[in-house]
Length: 579
Image (cartoon, rainbow, N blue to C red; front, side, top):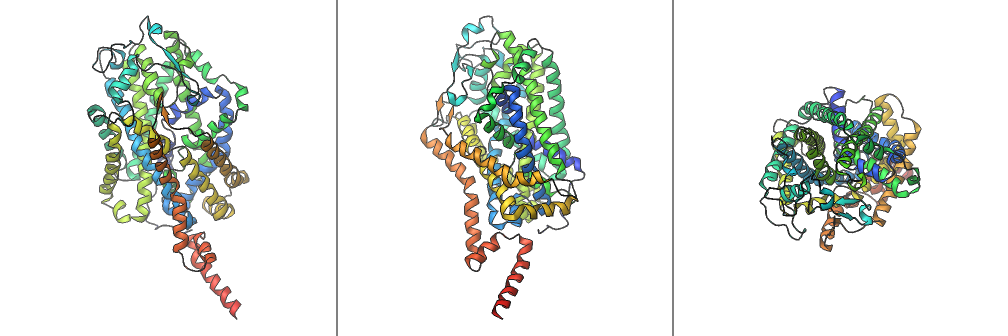
């Protein structure tokens, strides 16, 4: 395999690499997605399929991506090109998904930032009052004695897992979310006005923060990671300690972990577990390959895979304890059932938990701590993804993204994505946010890339050849079960989830709002822009090669460092045949 110039920089120490990967793989999804899925799929019983999938799918994929970057010394596009030129499109798909992810995660950061800023008040939290400009006449104060008479419940459809939720038209915390933060319009066909200046300011600030974290590449991000990774953990531990001391916390935690073993018979539980492992580890987006390319050649990229997956799983579980301890207290104070308050996605952290903070003494402090922790998690995932993209671009445009002037082009990269993301700041921006989240950077796109990553290494490049390369690099051969996972188990798991996702597809909806057909078509175009990279690049590389069809194919699947050698062998074979 062709190595890049020896001048390529490396991490100052292995801890910079560890902390950057920790920050990238442990994010908001560990709080709002894992917690909900664990509750939905049998509590503690969900940990069984989750652990199995993490072992047989998560560890092999994360090891494969880090090892590929370390072997090739390249970003995600050039790395795939170096092993199988025909599959360079896998790298382009990763960069496309990263772009979509960055567009909407910046908005999530701005939400965290505005909640954090508004927590600094000596009076009542702004979402715990009903005398604001955004409140309606039907507003219900959090903690009112008649709250149960004013809150109505609406059973969601089967597509939303039949979870009861608080009616968004009344509770003051939800009016703050919808009326002040989002200023939500009636639908995606009604974008409304661009007048949400508080969120606009936080949105710009979020991009500036991300840029400052990667202004000098890994020399900056390597140092920043120590703070942005450790700080959220310290803050979440403080919240956990506070949470478990609250009245009703034990009920919430028991509700979270009590196993319902009968749920293991349901195939949907296993599909949710597999998808959560892939999503929470942020596989297939490219940064892991980029981070691996900055490792020293003899770094043990196999054993670290266990550390990364273990840390991600343990963090998800710890965050779940924290969230459900607060939900248990909230249910006790409001005399509600916990199941009526649990929901996945942003609603958990921007609708439900702010209600709990409004009920606590010194709720301003706990709210500020929580949203600062969320902001730290979002920053980690954002700047790591930007670094992965710029690393991939630097392989092909070194004059722009390497050297003394690289910070200018990094700024241009961030600025372009920021401009695209401004569409989300209109009153109907939340609908664009959900559209990009559903179609552009999750679901079938990630699974599609994961399938071709495993097939490329396991079958086209050759798993034995890949293990030979890894053995030369780390000094020992990884166990055979990892070999079988990459070649058989991982692509099978990913393909099964991919097919199930396609079969169970339903048009996008948000709450009771159903997206119009043309919005779903736009969403599918976003997905197509990711998925089509693989076949389009493969066809382009195939037909741009010289020789017969057989020679073209052989050239397209031959690693770059081997092409000259194999061409000489072919010429000698042809000469011998003629003679």
